[in-house]
Image (cartoon, one colour):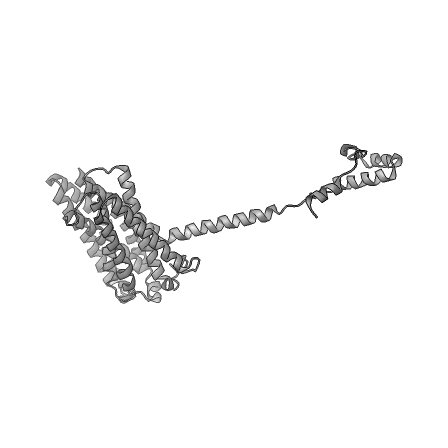
Length: 365
């Protein structure tokens, strides 16, 4: 029955009393009944029953519509979250922070805001593309690890072709931005970083523990993207020492992670230092060596590009801020356990930005 039919059925003729006349007590209704025409009375009674009925005359499926809209909003929100997770946002953020520092050093001064925004966009898109491609490659392995089983591709929330297309679009967009807004050099460095990370490091993870060294280089090469985009040369020792700082830092940082998740890595089939050598001695040695190498690269940079006084002060500051990570690495070497590994991980997250801040301030000062 249509809405118009329901309304017509509910109407009364113009001779019928107004609704307020029927909304009185039962005595009033009885009084009306004694004097009214029977046909009019029937209509009045019907009208009164309609007034007393609290249910609406017409019911629209508003709740169903709201439910459908909410479901669509939820699905869109989940899709956005999954796409962001594919990019490995924490790694991208770390790369962008280091890019700012290296760009400032490469330019020798503060960058203009438009140039800095374009640089961060291009670098971030390439890094996000590499992270996405890595998850496409490892989607079956990720299912075996509790740490990664809920990733979008491993959990089958997204098909692999979506991840592949997404990685391609991000990578092309980032390369175009770096090439058009800066030069071919940072774009080529970006392409080399992507190829090394996706096509060399990723498959090596199930074959040899040397994958960490390759991954450290691949993770540090974006330093050259920022450096060359801001005017530095690819052959400059400064640019490569900046790469050395980030590559060295990744050893204590990743060895801590590899130790804490060694059982999951082993179950998934990854060849890590902590699975090949379950005693943790190899991981501890690499952590200590990485911490020392980071201090060495940072101090070398300061002595190359600063005055004796400035370099001396910067070197002392570098030693002071790096000591907590070095100390944690030594403890990890002596007695590897989850608690010390977690301490090492936390210290590494603090040390890197502090060292980069000291180096940047020294070279620009």
